[in-house]
Length: 312
Image (cartoon, rainbow, N blue to C red; front, side, top):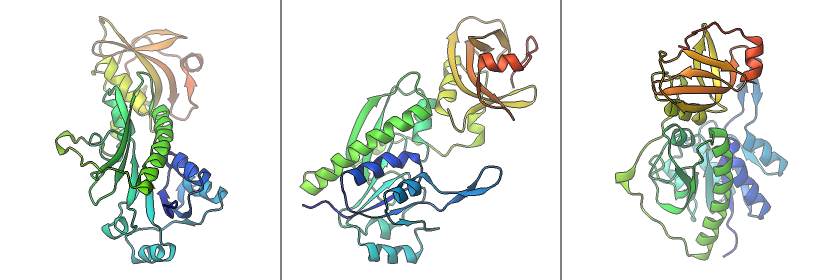
């Protein structure tokens, strides 16, 4: 079977490796659908999503519907006639009519070992929850939230020091490789679909601002997982002298302590020790509100910490 005509739907950087590999392997891309440009930064200047920028570099037609459930999007599908739709972090829920349109189905790249971590933020929550295994799933889309049949899945170790940023980039690449394998199986007629085991379903809900607030009464390892799971963005945070302090990197040091949780202990160029419930969290990389992100040694040169300061 010839390579199928593919409509690609994606928005953020996670989708870039998949779009790139489809283009490099000469799959006929009939178009790329991305979210509309959004105002960003202090000047609220409209910024194009990463997928749109790459698609334009490749000379591909780009479509940015406000809502894919509008009838005009079905008219676009009739015009483009895709045989397959590939979705990677698109950002809108697809209606049944869109999912069922292509004869070779609608595929989705999901960065978790489904049925675990269905939802909007699987990368973050896997790290926050201290998982040691992760992976990518290529699934057939249905009307549910990440509930469709699994076509291919690959497991990989989740490193103890991996941040959200690290895992994002690694699983985006793995997802692109797995996508090509899946499409090749579909076109060869050898693809096998497997229903998800509903007894193993867990969820990865959208992150809220309060998700990132550090509770110093937690164990040191729990706090470090939170920091790594939100680094570099949106970043875990605490309050120092009334100012928000984002924390991007830290290590746990379990030990007996005689300080209240949140109290600053040893201060040196190696790190800033903060008491947790079962030891210390050693802060390595921080950003105070209104300042640049910096290593702790640079931060301490410009900020005088009072003894026994308590982070809130």
